[in-house]
Amino acid sequence: MHMQYYLLAIPAILLLLYAIFKWDAARSEAERMKESLDEIEEDKKNYEDLLTNVRLQQHALKNHMETISSFRYTQQTKEGLAQTEEDYCNQLRKENKYTDLLLLGDEALTGFLYGKFRAAGDRGIEVDYRITAEIRQCLVPVYHVIEMLGILFDNAMEAVNGMDRKEIFFTVGETAGAVSLKMLVPGMEL
Image (cartoon, rainbow, N blue to C red; front, side, top):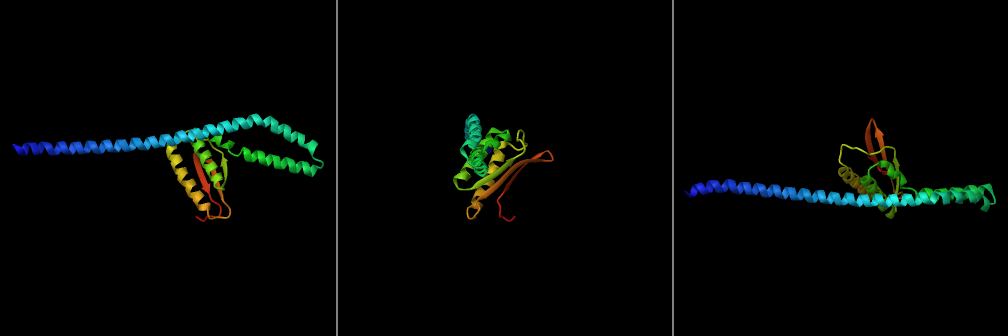
């Protein structure tokens, strides 16, 4: 009679252990997904910051154009005028450096890259980038792309720390219908 209870108890215990294992796996997956969502929300906040910055710069464009036009009245020579205009335009390019990120077409990815570029700048690392393709639909979920790019950027920033020239090149392009993401650290051998 006791043997029947044991025969019933063993599968019940195994079933209970299996259910606990599945529950724990589901809970871990839910935590991982929540972390990914939190990161995406942070990236969207960065995207909104970038949009606000671009909108403010668009409003200032008229003032910049008037400023450039008035340089001819403040400079005595053509060389002085050319140098003043060049310096001013270089400053404008520097201030509008991140606006091309909006060409990506994905808020989370744009916000993520904006945050990474600013973090690199804070560490004294120059990021030169080119965007020639949109990332609207991708076979790989955007949070995986963000995770991969995060690792690449962290590695690239770490690699340039000991270098004289702290510079990273990043491109988003399209080749044969596929989006390509490339990162290059000048002076690094493959």
